[in-house]
Image (cartoon, rainbow, N blue to C red; front, side, top):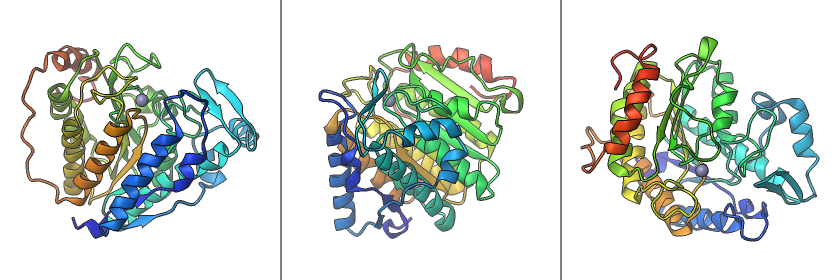
Length: 345
Ligand SMILES: [Zn+2]
């Protein structure tokens, strides 16, 4: 993959979503994203500014009444839940974030190459009718539904944020057209994401939760990817892969209790990129979620671009180290998933 095939969608306007002083999901995160985007563009990387997401795209995953409520926050500072605030420009900025994610997916579909959306506010906690956990619109869910509307049949959403993406899970819980796979610290905010949450009705087996004890590190996550995430992805055979890229499982993160390194994150991303290149005709889209240590965030964003701009590797050696936390989680995950994914684990 040449760098010139990879598109980064970002905007200096992401700084205009103003959270209260001391809030971890702060405008400085957008400044980090803007710096990374400038470096990318300065070294020849293709970049684009997002357009606001359409009402139609939002309405595929959010209730009409909820969309009216969020629209009504324009120009105002509103507390939507204990952690989630708007400022006067937040609604417009959230529309740009979702629009950027849709543009990243469009690039992946049109060009068969990675499209990345570096955005805030994040999205994966936003439910059909509820703002939650710093999230207004569910960027990844909007983008997955957009890909289905474009005619794709199966979308895989992989979420390695330290928190469980309850919003994505519930939006597609009974929908087999979207595979949702989450690795997350557990028990932890938002409380959902037990291994037994596997989807229901048509969606039974297309929700895969890997709840991990605090302290899980690079070798643990790599083992989870090798033994569960990648085999289930292969079995599902998606038309495209969408990565909900939260970097708050980094060891330096002030909110999360996991121990991933920047390199550990890059290896997980590389596994997904290699899969998408080989099995999905290069259709990989990436959207940012959490990540609250600014330096770790900056390194991880740079690392993600670097992985996506490189040729997918033929093979990736396992990460060495203790995997006892992974082993404990894999027992319950394989028990819950074995009816749907025989031979996994
Ligand atoms: Zn998070």
